[in-house]
Length: 532
Image (cartoon, rainbow, N blue to C red; front, side, top):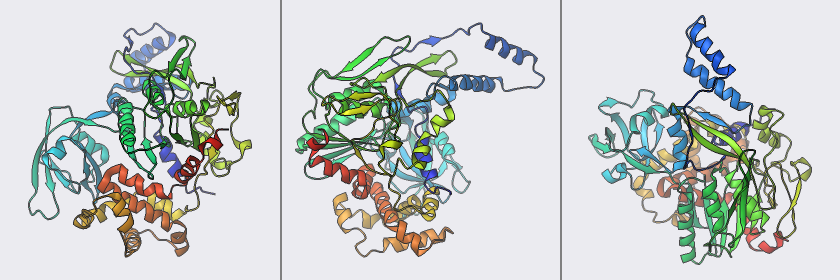
């Protein structure tokens, strides 16, 4: 039987990629400039000199390197020079460009939002603007793709690009000459109050700026009297070891071991808390799921091993390997696994990979197939060597972080109808179109709280959404609407809220129907019970 959630799960897993790792900051990158005199080099030279047909030798060499690294472990990776900047940008916390989030709607580049403080916002470019020309050339109605837009609009700081913008209500195109600049990429996606006592922080990765973003959120919560905290690491694929270590320092007392690393050629290196943190005493819940990997698992593992807080969700990915970046002579790079990391109790949570790399990559699908993601059953979960937390609770190595409180993958709203709608992004398109047509009306909402209480008081939104879906040639039954309609409605409201208040608005709305959030709030009513 086809699983309608499989493409959705796969999409979330793709984000893990080479970024699913604990990466040592490349402060002192080693550079290798000499090719070793090996049998492989000899063969490559002979092929280059004598092979019967013309070949793309550079591509063949890259393929050979990737194939070799694939035999070592699942996370060592070769990054071609042309791809290195794009791979590093999410972890460095910035990129260079004009500073807009965009979508392609109706074969036209539409500004979803200008990034705060970026050159586009400073010039007055607005959400909803259509970019129809770039440097005098038409870019609307030509079947433009996302990568084409990125190529046209991104560029080095200080360079310029001219765009012609159509704005609803303005009779003529508006011309802008934008000087590209450094644009921040935020990894704390949302930070707001769940209730009077409880703060919520959603972290998408552990990048170079994450610690500063995290502490800024904690300082704001401290001003507001927050005494309980939910840190959401679901879907977080990892990042820099130094960043996650500093962040754990904000929730653990001084002198506590956060994590240690050790490898064949690298001696044991310990990371400990060093200073008084901003949230050492309040009640804490950490949310994880099957796509929380590496740095996320270090954070959750330290909190769990010291019984500092309660881990809520589903068993994490199981990635306990540490990569170090090495710059190569042609501008490409190697991220090589150099050590394993161990949580304070001594466990390495790396799941097995030696037998079959393909099995390793598809292991999360197996969790879904065997029911682990939907039903709490310890017999289905990977168990390795037994360890003990600070309070003597049993935890396991060798297969991710098992949560203290299980929250099943919610399948109650699934249907083939929902999968089809999500797979082609119809809800996002409708939300954008709705915002575009009701800009003045929506601008009347001062806060997301007000929006949540009064928006769509006449309950017309769902009917409009279903008409929009029909217009896109998707059929459905009333049973499918009964099954999936409430979730689609909630998600659409959240997407509209994102247009108004960015990710804070989105998560404020969507989290109200999130079972893991509800579970976290229940846990925080009696945290001590779960840590016995």
